[in-house]
Length: 350
Ligand code: 5AD
Image (tube, rainbow, N blue to C red; front, top):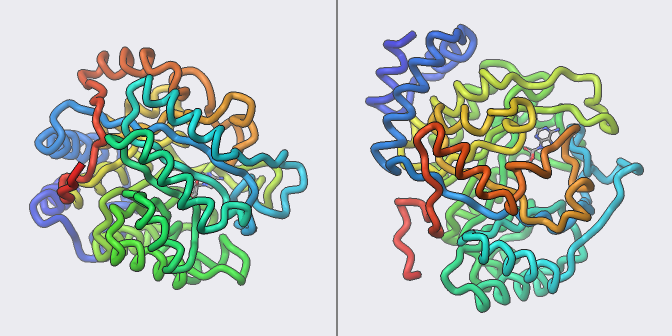
């Protein structure tokens, strides 16, 4: 297996059958070898620096009904909230003072934020913080809306493809959503000029090693600037409440494979990883990740943005505890970088 890892390091992609073999024959020795190679690769590009992003969870209203997600529209128990522009600007100002230079505005697909409202929020943040990047993560929109966000100054967009396999996609989502349309959205985002992020859950219900291999191959084709992956974690008020959670080890292994495939990609150690393992974030960094996204949302709404059970919202997860995070990373030899942290592939004027 180490031979396959060496080949992936050198060639950045493998035939589907080799990916399937690597993933299905997953063993701890292979994972630690992959992590070592991935860590060296990340260090060659980013040194020992970790980029931070302040996550602002705009709204948990969502028009969609994804079977895995706690803020799906059918979840009558979710206590819905949305942030107004002034609250969002307040979060960004607080984040700026803490050293954040990227703000990620993430939310359910909430029709309250019309194209004009969202564009106004983006341009207001950019006006107040011209040295900051704004990342949007507000789901599937029309091409025109994406263009309007971009014209308002948004720099990056996150939209996980969730699973590249159409049949698998339709087992995770109601029929009104399609994997093909989601991929179309990703192509639009790239064409418009966003630094684009995609990704998937590890261990989502019905997922096979072949599905994961196809996820890697889809990403090889898309060439995103950012990739977000995390373990599936069941939420008790969803149809997948009884499904088993994803594996931390397999997530770490996939982070390493992704780093070897995309040496300069922006790869977060995600909240879901930190939720399943108290040192998940550190393990993610040591497996090749180079980004963390602490929470900047107002305290009062944090417990409401529950995509899955036990989602972290305090402690080192909280942007306000950045000193803890800094200390935790120092222990493993890494430093937080105060910087926009753009993709090395993109030359920005800022
Ligand atoms: N477990 C893990 N990740 C989840 N997401 C949504 N629900 C869950 C869950 N139950 C992820 C999806 C989405 C991102 C914002 O959160 O991949 O794209």
